[in-house]
Image (cartoon, rainbow, N blue to C red; front, top):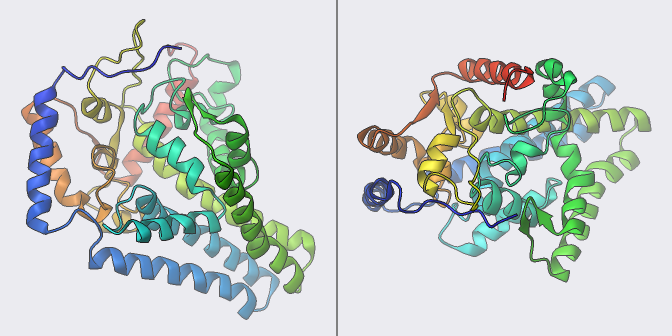
Length: 357
């Protein structure tokens, strides 16, 4: 496959003007990184996660243990979204050691920061919604998520079974995906530069995670192996769905595009416009949704300025929307969370239709 490139001459003025405006705003604020609001979120979510883990041991009872496992799954997801996601983008602090520290937390939550950096930062953020490149579009089994994918008869039922596969996302990370990607050495068409230390870190952190969340509970908790494994799986089903649905609502809804390169490997738009066309916001007026999702309901702003801490997205969004309108470019957004979910459901139905090409 030919190397994918963007049309850098198209709408170049939009990109330059937008970056000038956002830079001026951030200079007025005094930083593009985390503020006291971000520090509060870090303390809140890590504290909630620690209390959830502690409750597994402090409050006896089989059914209460399932509640604890559920809270562990929920706050693991929120910690990953609010803290680790920004850290791996280098947007929590100007001090890279701080970013590295919170990036490493991602590994103790069962995933792998090295693989995520390639699949999310380098590939997904570069080639959003491009079939054959962006594995966020191409990697959900039995679910058709792009008009460029082959249609199968069973896809007409995907609106009913897709949520189950979203729920399996973090179980896949913990036990399968990270190992497979390191072994393959490739994300889509992008080759990963893997050193021995990356493999050692992967194995060491996986063993640490298995010890913390499987071996110790199996040795210490006074329940059957089956019950503890059930709790662990419930935790991941909740975590996987929470993380998965947030990204679905940003890129797999009715309004977004799925561009494909031409015969020379060139995409129609420049990178910034490509992000506008392939990404959608949701519920941007809701402070509650913003607090839970780590600002990823402002997905447009995140894709355009991934190195900016998410606490700045609400203010930046006004600049992005105004500049997009000024240049006649789209600014996709579903007004509410339920509206975004309905749009995603309609999208799944459209992609499940044999008539969709």
